[in-house]
Amino acid sequence: MSTILIIEQLLNGLQFGVMLFLMAAGLTLIFGVMGLINLAHGSLYMIGAFCAAAAAGLTGSFALGLVAALAGAAIAGVLVELIVIRRLYDKDHLDQVLATFALILIFSEGTRWIFGSFPLFLDIPAALSGPVALPGGIQYPAYRLALIVAGLIVAAGLFLLISRTRIGIQIRAGENDREMIAALGVDIDRLYTFVFALGAALAGLAGALVGAIQSVQVGMGEPVLILAFVVIVIGGIGSVKGALIGAVLVGLTDTLGKIFLPQLFALFMDPAAANQTGASLASMSIYVLMALVLIWRPTGLFGARA
Amino acid sequence: MTRRLTREGLLNLAVLAGLVILPLWALWADEPFTITLATRAVVLALAAVGLNIALGIGGLVSLGHAVFFGIGGYAMGILAHHAQTYTSVMEWPFVIEGTKNMPIIWLVATVVSAFAAFLIGLLSLRTSGVYFIMITLAFGQMFFYFAISWSEYGGEDGLSIYVRNSFPGLNTLVPIQFYGLCLAILLAALALYSALMRSPFGLALNAARQVPERVRAVGLDPFRLRLVAFVISGAITGLAGALFADLNRFVSPTMFSWQLSGELIVFIIIGGVARLFGPVVGAALFVALEHWLGGLSDYWHIYLGALLLLIVLFGRGGLIGMFAGRGKIHD
Image (cartoon, rainbow over all chains, first blue to last red; front, side, top):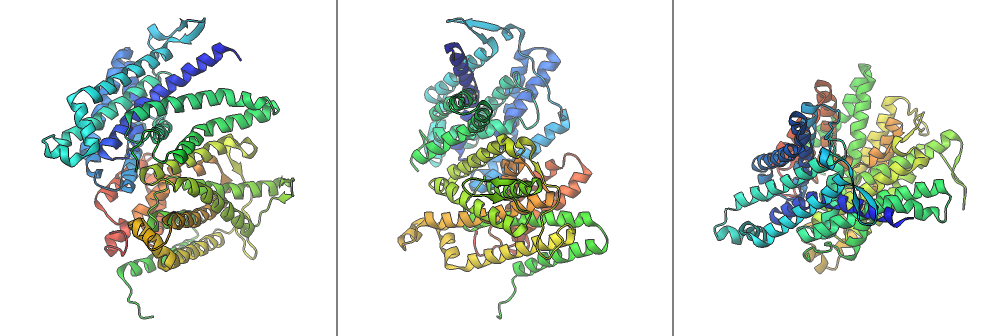
């Protein structure tokens, strides 16, 4: 097994992890600040991808597609927050799960209604379509490298926003004591809408970026949503740092497991059986990882002690 | 017995009467498809009655109950598959043959799902709140992906069973007879639920949901109460899975899907959490809507979603709550 293959797979895992972080960051912020479980976060991811594909298809520009994804998902986020989510903050988790499950049904079927059941395609911009040469003679797709860089830039921006700006202080204060910051004159309703829209925009961005390497279709959000939940549970719900570490951990486990577990089993089993066992274990590996983390630390790696 | 019938009691009687009369009417009117729909509703209701023990009495919001539904389904699928291909399930260390006999299949489905519920409960009941919701969801996904990659039993395509399994003394191929069987099991599960609610165990479990500290203070262990509830709950949902597989004569990984876990919760909420007949009303309404709205529009999930939102936002206590007022618990 060559070093080049390993480095390539590490990069693939990192790319997957960084995209998961974009999803997970919004989820974890929304839970941390508002205490809301948002199953419909995957729908915002889907909306971002569809806006990007539609805008890029009309204008031929990938950049405009990204803008459309950010704007579309953020607008959808604001609308949903104002109409539905706002009424769920003081309800219990069961009601939140159910109401946001209902939102998934509405968004998925609505999108199918508008765009039909066939997948749309979003092309990778021409400038990023080829491979780039990395040190060590590794050829790696430029677009995937761009995803890693873009994801890391967004992550850095998010950390700066939360640690250095006034709105970041309000967000952190909101996580700790929402009555107190309301008493200090912060418009808590506006803060909540802002946080929800921010999370939605991040999910939409992830949807558009990933949509270019996969197909854009109804139901694309739910598998990612569940992975993002695994990420925030591993990282500790409410912790953005935990979400980043959890996302990279999940991305690497999933990608490396799919490649290396079958090979590992091939060392002491016959190839067909090894492939079978390896593949089934690989697809379960992140859930096993999550179960192990929760058994070790029931509130995740960086979660507050319950 | 001079207990006065409450409005909820009357409503329950009406639902029960409907469960008996509607299929008999369908039999008389020669509409076998209506009987199949009713069977589907009854089997899904059974699965949700199982979940209601954990969710309603115990307050354990499990978003992974499809695990047990799927295990029950695969127990039926695997046993019947080996029976119809005349092979044995395993030959070492001892021989297990396939079977087409329903009581044996049910026993296997119940025991295996109870065992799975015990293991999953042991791990996930250490957590609570959102973490519990998420870890049960993760276990569901684990089984889902395992079933997809289990190519020996059909992988993603699932398993078809050509002839419905048999029950001694009945012809299960006749829709109304199979319906009667499923209804009898549902009624037995409802009787169990009602007995549990009133038993010391049920009262303690209910108390552990409301104030775990006090339960601990009188010397009971909330963890153990919840674990027992989770096992009973998983076993009933597993039995429902075996029946569901027999109804469709087909099992596939979708029985493990998280949407199904979500739908089971939906049944309970539509009907009313911790109401005896809540899951039955919810499942019946869901199947009726699925059939009726599904016939009107390909996009019927939109209307279902809107209806669910309205129930969550405005209808506390589900349909039974709207008709019968607040219940004794969950207010």
